[in-house]
Length: 110
Image (cartoon, rainbow, N blue to C red):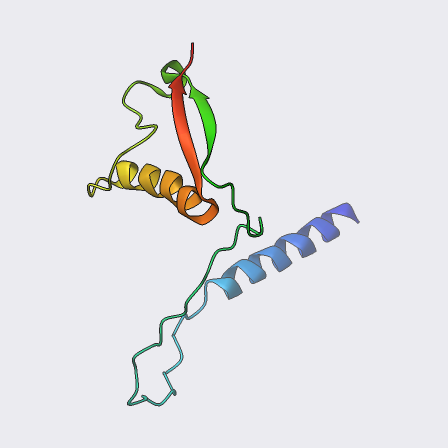
């Protein structure tokens, strides 16, 4: 009895394997070409959901350790210069300064 069940399962598995390896023709493209192929850019705005605040130039002190990230990491930059990391740090620091009217002060810790 077990031999018949094993044979039947083997036959079914082999048949499914062969069926899955059948002809793989791709269907013909039946879509019509549109004369207007330019896609309109989608404007996405990322919100921080923090609300509107005015800190009136208050200074926020940030203590960092160069030993954690390395001495080559720019913690604060004066201007964007085209370097990816430098520009990202510049935007990270400039956006809250402008949006919330605050000052960021960076201090090297231990």
